[in-house]
Amino acid sequence: MIELPESYLDSMRELLGEEYPDYLNCFRSDSIRSLRLNTRKSTVHDFLKINPFTLTPVSWSDDGFYYEETDDPTRHPYYYAGLYYIQEASAMLPAQLLPIEKGDRVLDLCAAPGGKTLKIADKLNGTGVLFANDISVSRTQVLLKNIENQGVTNCIVMAEEIDHLDRFTEYFDKILLDAPCSGEGMFRKDRKLIKSWLEKGSDCYAPIQKELLHKTVKLLKPGGKLVYSTCTFSRYENEEVIETALQEYPDLHVLPIKGNDAFVAGLTEKTRNCVRLYPHRIKGEGHFVALLQKGDTQTETDIVSDAHNNVFPYLEHFDIDLSHGYIVSRKDRFYLEPEIPVDLSGLRILRSGLYLGELSHDRFEPSYALAKAIKDKRYDNILNLSLEDQRVLKYLKGETLDVRDRHASGTVLVCVDHYPLGFGIVNKGILKNKLPAQYRYQ
Image (cartoon, rainbow, N blue to C red; front, side, top):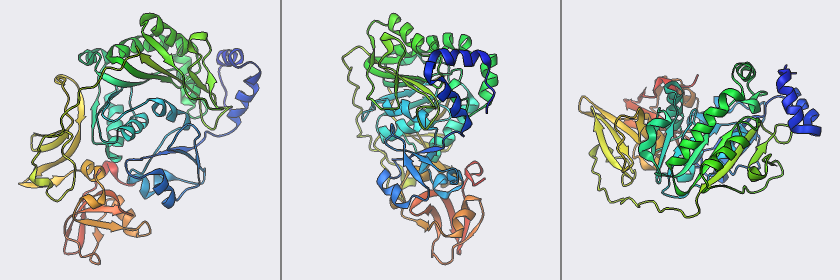
């Protein structure tokens, strides 16, 4: 049994009333394990045909599943192929509720490590533009790694304070603000958060959350929609933050969320349409989610012409759509960047769009990000290995492969069951591994 602070227990006893013993009892069991499928790589239907795990659906997610303790999906080649992302079930709800439409401009403001960003990317499916921002550069590096592994092509990855984003005033159609919080909903999953709660509780986070939400609304277009979420139970960090925003912005209102037996309504009259998730009521941890709209009339997003007529001879062997952006070069590195009518100069940008590769000694070296962004049929030199082939694991470990049985040569896209893992160079039947060290099997 986890030892919880007495002051915290008092607050939960007051909050839950007769349900309080059930809440305490949930700490006698382990945290629930879950993953979310990457629907840009495979449909749910197709993945379940090859699914190697014991999966049961998460009721509030159209692509989320629980897996068993005996499964270890992070050690499976499909994980390295980017077919799914390990995500706590309750954390799937915020991005699931954000009503993304094709071509939207979307901001994930506190994005690292990237689980919610990846769901938004799945909904956009290569259209529009996604800004994934986190104030921490180190955390943003993890975010970038996850985005590349899952093959996201239309994302601007930034590490900025919200005050530096005022150039985007009323720019975004949709915004997700998963605010920093005291983490009460994750005490069972991560016990280090209990110590953090003792050092920095709601008194620390509530003012930060109110300021963040206040500034976030300014970035939202009239008629645009915003999800505010936390993984804590404190009304000071949830309902009170929402009510403060409603006072500051009279045109802001809370939208209803489709019902689910696991959902509990917000605690006040103005926040009844918000949702609380409790670990004693669901298979998962704790969360708070509010879906907000700024005004009633949606301002139309300017349609960007796709007719860019990009010519990039180094991609002549790739069947990749270059129409949704511009190819730019920086010191012999090439990127496919989405068209953005806002000056991005001065911002800390870790990645802008899809990194295609670089020129080295007059030879084009395709990037790992490019390998993960395409499907095997969109490159004309494939080395496909079955899941049972021992060379899959050897490749993921960065080893040289003997592929003399495949008659392959040159730069090949290495796949497992037709899902790309990365590139290699084959000469006389021996494959030189080009998988970057940070993406190898650990």
